[in-house]
Length: 89
Picture 1: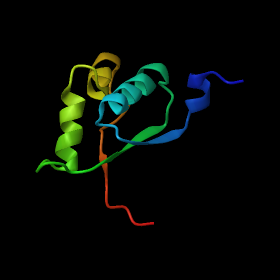
Picture 2 (picture 1 turned 90 degrees about the horizontal axis):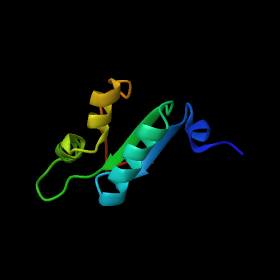
Picture 3 (picture 1 turned 30 degrees about the vertical axis):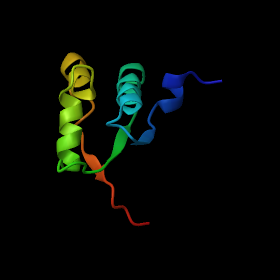
Picture 4 (picture 1 turned 180 degrees about the horizontal axis):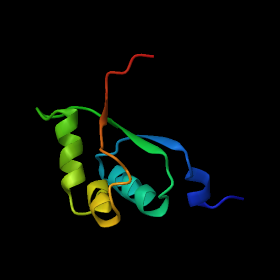
């Protein structure tokens, strides 16, 4: 059985609720524990007059966030970009 970092190596992860309490913890944990993850996409919606991009940027500016992880470990994760809520399949 593969370890969690081995499982997520070179994988792309799609997360809903990333700006919520548990979502923030999940994103931080994936970035900290799985440095070989290919990409993390966060489904983000606008809320209370704040755009999806603004919400994601606010989350990334909080003390324990992927931006902080990038600052600590180098910007190997790229720039965070929200996936708009209005997705049509």
